[in-house]
Image (tube, rainbow, N blue to C red; front, side, top):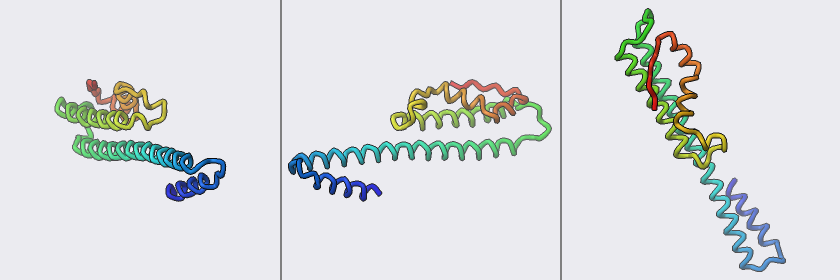
Length: 142
């Protein structure tokens, strides 16, 4: 698709009879640079989505393994379990923030300004964390 667009743009620049050859070459290189720039931004968005998907998949697997190791009759976490679960969530937060930070320029304007505290707030206000309130979970994320 990109090659087709480049060829089409090149044909359009060649058909502009009022522009001399050197100007056509300049226009062509500017168009090429624009295509590569937009392609790079698209690639960065793809990298962000892939990183978030990978992080979410790993988080789901880690939490599934963690919860399957618990006794169903428990009403709270032991200190060791709390430490382990907080570490899982902290890794999730770190990786989500890292994905956003590394691809900040390609993200939508509302997400470019995202801070680590915003990520922490989103994770902590999730439905999963609401369900875990009965376990009196106390994690300190920074």
